[in-house]
Image 1 (spheres, rainbow, N blue to C red):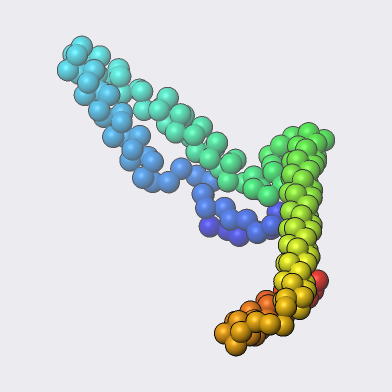
Image 2 (cartoon, rainbow, N blue to C red):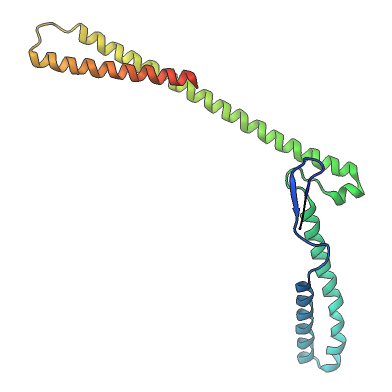
Length: 184
């Protein structure tokens, strides 16, 4: 396993595969060949089975091709889509591929950032409107309490004191909320 940086975007990359087929794959090829030869032996006969043993080489070629495809995928950068094999063959196509990927990523990023900004602005505007309506309601409540007749009983005076204290507390909490929203 080798670690290196992408030459275009400097993202860390790992190459987990070796350039050669591992021993276990050769064992799988031999096992597949043996099973195919045994099948031919049972269906056709021993002479055809000896000729069928040549199937090892086409199977090996298929496994080599699949390993090559895996190696090529492992070499590609996941961030910028840099392909070193394509770069060796045609650097203009490799550059166009990277530019296409980067413009796609940046366009999506710009759309996401604009959506987030709009969401924050909308939440601030709605919280300011909510704070204004709460302040208006508390002001109206205080003015209503002040305009009530003075001929109320002692119990109504006590309930008025409690209500005015609650109104004062709600006004203070509304002011604190408004201040914290302004700080955002």
